[in-house]
Length: 96
Figure 1 (cartoon, helix red, strand yellow):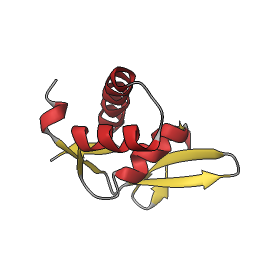
Figure 2 (cartoon, helix red, strand yellow):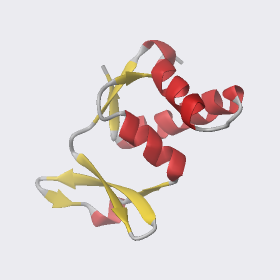
Figure 3 (cartoon, helix red, strand yellow):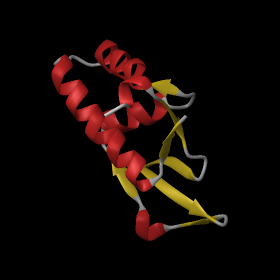
Figure 4 (tube, one colour):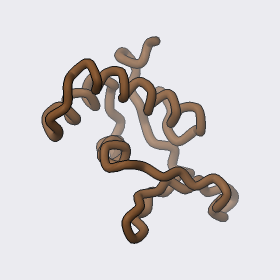
């Protein structure tokens, strides 16, 4: 997987909202929210999304997570790769 060498950027057609106790990503199509395609993020997923406010490399994301959370580096690499793959799959982020 080439993610370590790529830079990720948010898709501007997704909005992030903190609703009560949930953090969600909502795709927007033709100025209308697709409510049947709401994605719930956990705390770490929301942190990653916030880090992508400006384009970041996979390595920069790993470093930010390790600086913020007490998590095993190997678990960060594995979980981050899976999460980024999921974001790429739904079109929430793109490689630039």
